[in-house]
Image (cartoon, rainbow, N blue to C red):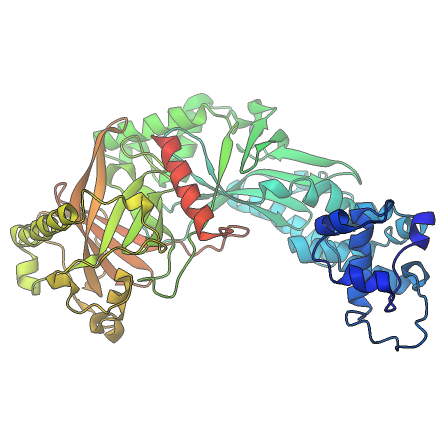
Amino acid sequence: MAVCARLCGVGPSRGCRRRQQRRGPAEAAAADSEPDTDPEEERIEAGAAALAGAGDGRSAGPSSPPRCSLLELPPELLVEIFASLPGTDLPSLAQVCTKFRRILHTDTIWRRRCREEYGVCENLRKLEITGVSCRDVYAKCINPRVKSGRFMKILPDYEHMEYRDVYTCLLHRYRHILGLWQPDIGPYGGLLNVVVDGLFIIGWMYLPPHDPHVDDPMRFKPLFRIHLMERKSATVECMYGHRGPHNGHVQIVKKDEFSTKCNQTDHHRMSGGRQEEFRTWLREEWGRTLEDIFHEHMQELILMKFIYTSQYDNCLTYRRIYLPPSHPDDLIRPGLFKGTYGSHGLEIVMLSFHGKHARGTKITGDPNIPAGQQTVEIDLRHRIHLPDIESLRDFNELSRIVLEVREQVRQEQQQEGGPEDAAGLGRQSPQPCAESPAEQAKGPGDGGAEAAAEPPAQSGQGQPFVLPVGVSSRNEDYPRTCRMCFYGTGLIAGHGFTSPERTPGVFVLFDEDRFGFIWLELKSFSLYSRVQAAFRNADAPSPQAFEEMLKNIQSLAS
Ligand SMILES: [Zn+2]
């Protein structure tokens, strides 16, 4: 109580004005000459002063300032004040005095913290419904054979649940695992979004649609979930396999990394043994049977992936990834795309813009080019003007055009002093614009993205497009008009990422949500279609943090 008594009033006392001028608790602590004032106290004062509208120090009148302690405020007002503070500040408030501690038992404070900081909805009844919906997703979509009844028994005890427990034992405790992640699973990668869903934290694994239907939506299934079973303890459950949730474990290794462990891997096994597990996996992953896949090489690749990935048994380490930051000058909105990768099936690729280049980074990968690597790089300074539709059918004609541009790029690179470091190219490091025919229509700005403002893009009509004879495409449904094309390079390598090299190609922009890449030397075409799913807690804190993340996942894969 002694501490409280000294808490700053809202009037224009000398000490108060002095405190109002401070920026943060750390500075306050450093500057304060009073020996027994701690930063926590200052923070409380600052919050109270701001709320009471005493910022200008004039409201109380100049002559006789009434002394009004924070402690004397009515409880409703204190609740209001406390509810507006970050939840992480509340425990220290509770330590100030018994009155504060008592007030902090008010669950509306914690309800607001849960909502504002983690998006949890307001009503515990509704939360229950969300929990059921999650159960239904699992029961119906993932395994229709599982009766939903068995999930009823394991639903948390909502009757006695308090938002304070939800905040402290679930949301705050596991806040570091919320967001977008890539599992460390050899060359294959993956995409996991950990989100708050009702009283659960759920790790959703996103899988590409079945090959080669790139326009189909992503499929998703829960890999683990965390929820409050009793008031104080959150339970981690592994959701892998087909026999319902079972005991699991989550460990936060360090910042931007965590791992999961399954404690009952027998739940992943099937009565029919490995054969049945493989057939089920094949049906889910590829939507067909092994016999349907005539291609022998493809059968091998699929079998290899099954053997490799299933050995992890849902014991995985995840690294944080971010969605690319977008900029008004970008050619199209950056983001995640599903792309065809020949016999490897569909892979997830992240498109991001870096000044005069755009990059496609693999979020999932294969034994040739693993996850994390840069699969395509698009040179936005070099547009390729496609010939008329008849000449376009002639592969040699397209080849000639592309190789001409490649030669030009080489010459420019020599002039600029060696091959340019694509990784180091950011918006912060503008490079001199190269003079080239492809540049003619370009504005004077600092990025190649201005090309997007050229008439073909604006018209929205585009020009007729067709693949040259001899170029294979797994998806014959590629669009027959395109907005514009650019020179680009694609990364190819032998099995095991051996002797990788960049090979020339054509980036074809169809529309806001679709693009393609013609792999010249492979005589093959990849079609990419935007991932429409919305991911939560996935934005990069800064463009620098995004670049850093790209560098990290690339170095870990090579
Ligand atoms: Zn498990």
